Structure formats: structure tokens, C-alpha cells
Length: 63
View (cartoon, rainbow, N blue to C red):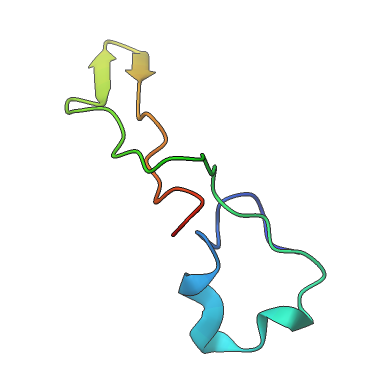
């Protein structure tokens, strides 16, 4: 079983072996419609603090 998001959507691992051999494949977040994510800047640092707003970009379920 892969850790959440480390295998992307599965395509990234396809060249390394049969994905059917895995007990489970935990993908990145997936939405019904494609989303490019939030515009830059996505990360702002201020002193010891950091704020991010990535927006979970993804191809959508039809991809």
C-alpha cells in the first residue's frame, strides 16, 4: 500500500511493475472536474510562520 499522494494518480508508478501487485494505491486528491490549483504565490513565509494555499490541482475524474 502506498502512502497518501506519493504515487500521484498511479501513472507515475506504472513503469516500475504491475500495480495490481499492490494491496492498495492511495492517490492524490481527486475531484469531479479538473482544477489547476490556486495562482501563485501559493506559499508565503513570515518569520517562523508559513501559510500555503495550493488549491489541490488535479486532472479531474474523467482523465
